[in-house]
Length: 294
Length: 261
Ligand SMILES: Nc1ncnc2c1ncn2[C@@H]1O[C@H](COP(=O)(O)OP(=O)(O)OP(=O)(O)O)[C@@H](O)[C@H]1O
Ligand SMILES: [Mg+2]
Image (cartoon, rainbow over all chains, first blue to last red):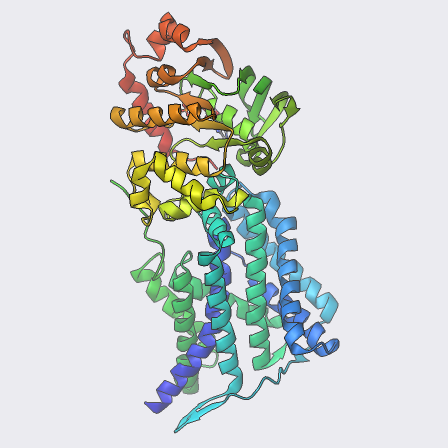
């Protein structure tokens, strides 16, 4: 029992990072109805940008982090300008397909610049390991959970408490209407991509800090897929719940099922869960209830 | 003065919708534009508002001028900010998942300043019902309330010229009358109004002048009184004579189901 709680707790911490990834997918999906398949590459690039500032240039953490995140946001904005903006007003599926191609392209770029070997990545954050009785939660996952949830909350405050957030929510509902009322939908899309890239970088840095940084790490970004499909593609709360569920599911599968000889089951488990959820609720747990008037 | 000169617009490079339309809107008037479904009225307003490229349409000939400056090809937000032209799209262009108050706030995005709150109060003054609904999601409001909200949102942009695309669509006659009375008041307060309508009678009643559009051309123009008295207009747009009003209402409903993009 204790063991299970410990496992679930660790799962929740990682799950919060997944939730943040899910959020990044959801805000782009809401704004442009496109799924960003290049999320893994954004994650790697964001981490590398921070790596360069912090480990190569030895800029103090407190400066390197915001600077790295801003750079990541700039990359997100640039990508949007070049690949997504020309497609505004076209079918969302074309944007989704562009992100697939974009993923390969960005991965190749990362490989060219940083190669495919592993970079050690250790942030040396203050030790906040929690040890109560038989429970033990390591410092790094706790930091990851805290920073992820903090970022998550900041994004929500931005979306629901500022006029920029209001403009984003309006544009997300209908680009043409937004345009007609003087909200520059093209610029809003740019902001959304930048914001998304920034948050992905936060997640990337946390995940790199669990082990090491390497171009192949991009696949972690695809964890966002079960997260948002379980939570509902267009639900911010769903991303949070979905993230936590996927984190716990993975932890349980890793602790109890893999030892039975099913190596790698941890990576499959969220997808099995996903299928179950979609059987019962095709729009995900929190997919939007459409306003219907009769 | 807004003037449209020999405007030709095509969608997707091939579908020609406006075939050389010319008209002008005098400052301070209510100009009514009537025409059957598919005549190109909405396309005309989209072109003026700078939104035609969003629908994959192109202005291939002609010009649109505001007090002599060409506004053709400017961004929608520039046209709104610099020339005070606000376009209220057809079919109640409100944000369903935002509250009524958030809708008004969103529409004020382009000009956020200290006068936003007083202006909101002014909108509530014109449409008291919105005040009662302000915390509710706009999608749950009734058709009439939604149309009032749409016009209220347009007011939040501080327009000099208001282009309304079929505001009476789907509204009961009594609500339409109420709405048109407010449009008249807005005009009296100094806002120039371009009113596109199928409900020709109600529109011409408050309008100063009118144009009739057919297949992307102006086929008739005159003062509101002249148009109200015109035989053809009476037959085709005012529903007197044999043409039944009901038939195009049905067609309209069908059209609303199909979505572009
Ligand atoms: N995005 C688009 N792509 C292609 N064709 C379009 C598009 N929008 C409108 N059309 C076509 O252009 C023609 C004129 O449409 P428009 O919406 O301007 O007419 P309207 O006069 O506003 O009609 P209604 O009274 O039904 O609103 C129609 O034949 C319509 O099918
Ligand atoms: Mg129309």
